[in-house]
Image 1: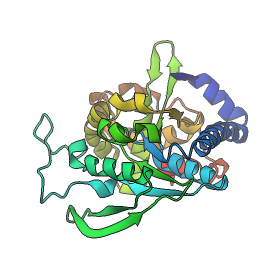
Image 2 (image 1 turned 90 degrees about the vertical axis):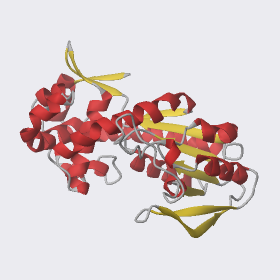
Image 3 (image 1 turned 60 degrees about the vertical axis):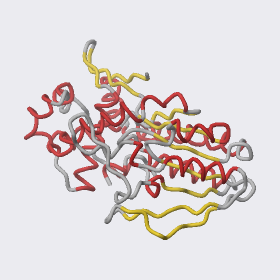
Length: 306
């Protein structure tokens, strides 16, 4: 686990915010470029790129950055959405969690055996018919999309079940797995730290407000279910990753914490009840980085702040 000291973060932000942002972003870029190089070197043996990570880990931007880096190296990639492999609800019953609520994050909601067989077929040089899922009616339609890998091409799969054993049973030797998450702990003082899942909550709360018209309270209400899904369906399979990307940018607390501080003001007690008390007390301790022009257009930050 990587640790950052809040005093150091604030000092760098106040001394030279442009340099702080630039160095943080360059470190992230270096990781992406290094991974892309390895993917391209192994593309003939490992044709499947599996991308996984918990909520608000920056999967979308990281996945896009990896695809761009691969493309610049002359390697073409095709994408398959795991969402299209959801089970039609007219053919199966949604599993329930321990409280009797629908468990929509369960792998049983997906036709993982079909996806597994499709990926194995692609590796054999065959053409597959990828299904299409209608989320409005919760059914798989009759429409399909043909996918075939040419020599040297790779296929990219992104989703919370990308490392599930059902998939890995047939494609492990033909795949590269990348796990994306916050791997940083913020040290506020000797006995006061903000764990990675708390830093991801900050990201999600800002994102939910900016893109989903949701209050901090609504994010809190969903957070327990999100964390449950991570514990059951993501964390047990981290060992399947070939690469682990720490997506946390050292400067991001100076952007996000002060935005959240205002929005969270009415919900301090609810945050305390949800185990986020350390976050409540840390919100006003970060230096302010409000010149958003310093943030590059392809930064992971734009997933959350827009």
